[in-house]
Image: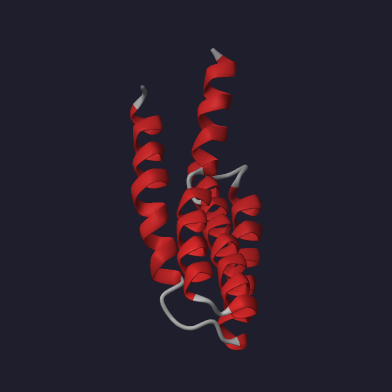
Length: 113
């Protein structure tokens, strides 16, 4: 495993879920949902703009946009149902969803060899 893949692994499986859990701590309100949606879209746009000049920075911005989008979806699910079991399920599913980009990177690395 290359150092870059090791860093991506740690980011995906440690930092991503922690960041997601921090983003869904407050109660889901309309201003918070708007901030998450705008932040996710903004991070994705910045990532796409930086992908040619600074690929790793662009990839990190796209990844942060992914985390924001997952947090937005989790907050929306919590807001629609408002049940303790749903709250727990959205936390678990969201933490798992933050690791999805790792599998894309690992698959791309495997196919490029």
